[in-house]
Image 1 (tube, helix red, strand yellow):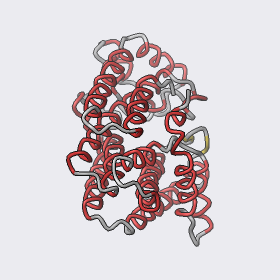
Image 2 (cartoon, one colour):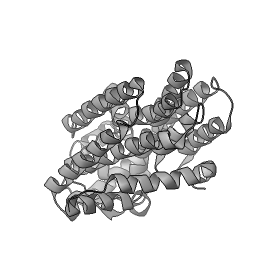
Image 3 (cartoon, helix red, strand yellow):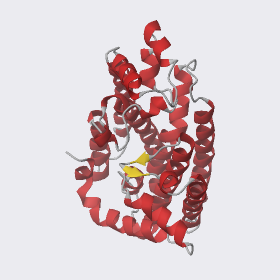
Image 4 (spheres, one colour):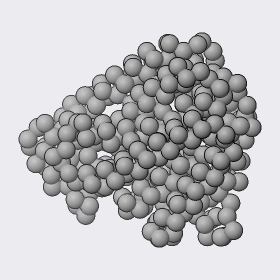
Length: 320
């Protein structure tokens, strides 16, 4: 089953948001327009807009207002992906050539900056100062997370706390903000929108851990990029940290470098898969999901609450 089947009643609003996304990235520069559209057409789960809409369902839901928040959050996510691909020297994203691969690093960086600027421009239509404060704080943390990820590349001496803080900034906070901002602009009381933020944070942590596991268990077709790509690029994830508790595997992983033969990388991937690290990582993911479901029970019952519960459970079971 695909995740989008869990919220089919949002389809018309999501179709509108897709049109708004395409409209938002139009530019006078043909090159900027082509590069931005290339990324948009590569697709994506649109999880952040979905969370924005569902958060809004707890209050006075007005699609004409909430769509700007949903589009803005997705654009911020898209911009971060473009910058990530430059940093990681990635050739593929969702099975398509990245902007840096199709054009070059300079075009990619300016495209990312343009998409990010358009996101902020859209948010100017929102008059709620709380919404702007939440978004500003989130962007600051997101930026710090990107720097920390660069700093920690090929740092095989980092600990669990480093990893959890990094994925919090890289993924969880933007998902948390999506849940909260949808509620804030819909006039949801503070006590409730703060709970939605916590729900999004826990789900975001679980989502990223699952993504990091899939880098070891998924196929290139499923992932849209080569399996083991994160490790090859020096990103130390939870399965790697657990696998390195074995001294032999730790020594093999320490030899990972960008140009290493695929045969050698595949041997290391197999060692990680057979070490018990996958199971331990998924157990941590499940703990975050349990926390998300627990906080969700404190919110008013409605259709959106059921959808949030179904999405959380889906994330825990997804294969790719």
